[in-house]
Length: 393
Image 1 (cartoon, rainbow, N blue to C red):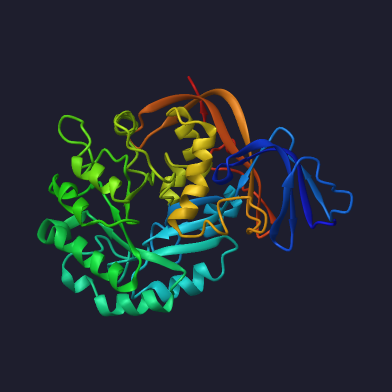
Image 2 (cartoon, rainbow, N blue to C red):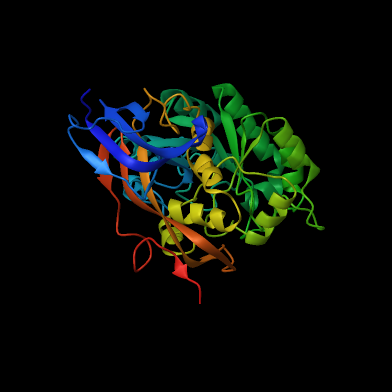
């Protein structure tokens, strides 16, 4: 057979199919055509030698901020995406009903990277901060219209359990988000952890029972007010109950909401995230977040296996966005989104949002990525020297 592309000799890790082996991957017409040993590449239009590299499904970052024309926290979607080895990104509520048309025209429809999103309950999204001060900042009717207009691109409703609104409205704010999600037959993503306002600490405990199967708690490893550990560092029983009924957990590193100590306590008590994500912004890229692969490397340092980290960056988020039939896997016939990574051994130092260090011996860096079978080269990297993290001092 002839192929458009054959990637040869790499270690293929496809957790959705329990594959971890040295294999070749063939692509035709933007789809995975074959995965197996010694694929005949004699008639391939081009080949890529991936010996010594990892070949994984295209990385999916399930929590980013990309409205770089309309908010102060927006990233270039392709710098967060294909130029960082990430083929699909989810904007986590940068826009609301009053601003989403602009996001669609300027970002989602022009980016090379596949862009999905959540719609903020606040009608202006993150164009103003704080985004919700009272009910005047929420337009339920316009939210419903926007959800329907962009069905398929918008995956659900985002609400942040932070700021002055929750001091007055409490769980009523979450109930509004729940109402909007129910009306559109989608899901709710709730941001927990508030570094700026004095949110009532038990608010998270009260909002968790409102969440339904498929809803998302983001910033699960936050150490801020509203975290999911009690005063004795025990996991809130409401969180375990939410997990048992199908609520999923996203880590969303961010500048303020990744605490290695909280992560260790939650993991010790059996609380596992479904997805690794960055909450990437320009300040986060310049600060402690850096990139998707740097965030993945931190999870290797936390003790996760390589296969687990790849699962939480591919198959897990593909399920979160409802696209496991097309994304997050290298199964034959699926979209040819592929990321080639290099695992570099060394003595590395990683930082959480409080600049607390964590030592690791492995680091992942992107090499190439393919979206719909088309190759994209990665950027220089977020560190002054490229992609690899700080060496241990």
